[in-house]
Amino acid sequence: MLPQPKNVIAIIPISKTNGATATGEMIDTKGFDFVNISIIASTADVVSNTLSVLKIEEGDTTSSVATFTGAVSGTDYTIATNAFTTTTNQNVWSFNVDCRARKRYLRVSASPQTTMVIAGSAALHRGEQAPTSSALAGALNAIYV
Image 1 (cartoon, rainbow, N blue to C red):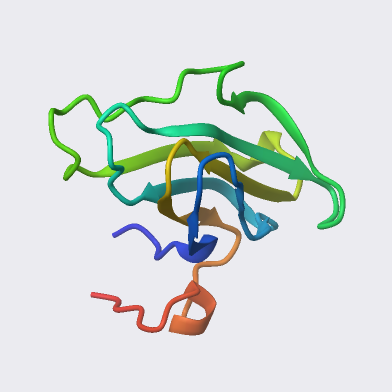
Image 2 (cartoon, one colour; image 1 turned 180 degrees about the vertical axis):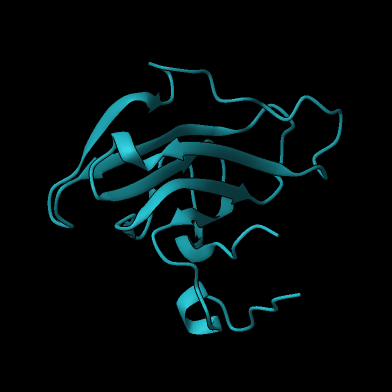
């Protein structure tokens, strides 16, 4: 059985309009080797609408962050558009980040092309110590079976 990850909020759910930026919470990766960051957006009014900006930044402190290679949309990758013919499908973007090669703090930012609700979560894995309680796992309930 794999150890329970520590879950944290990457972006508190918020409605943003065209061009406005949802700036995430600082993700403290201290003691963890790997993080999966998932960004979720509500359906858009037009199928081709997607995020215009999606990036991860890193920093040694919570007050100073900068982008890093591989994590900036439009520069390092193209943001996938929901290719289905309706506006009812999921909009989820996921990043798997090796924390051993990164600075201590990570932050994600996203900007929509139309009004969307944006949220994000991060699951920190391979910790120096496995969480032994819900609080340490960053969850309201952590079930160990």
